[in-house]
Image (cartoon, rainbow, N blue to C red; front, side):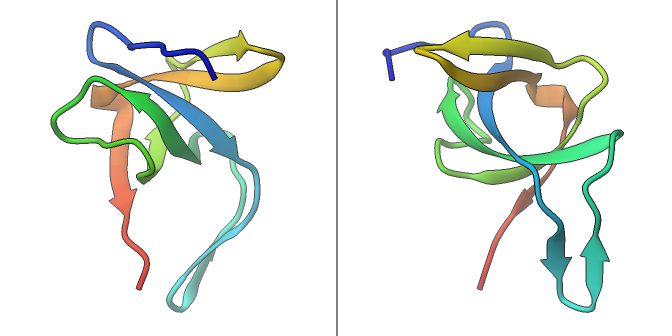
Length: 84
């Protein structure tokens, strides 16, 4: 992938489209909140490789080198998923 630096509090995310098992809960793929892996970030909070849950209301679809990504505002990131 090209070296791209998101600006203005945005991160570049590769979407994960599958159900997520969090302990006893199974969170189904839904339209209001989604999950992804951060592939580019200019943030002090979210790092490349972090798995996140984010609001998809104000996201933007981005295509780079024939791959689909999503540009997400840092303020729309709800959580960082830490796996054991």
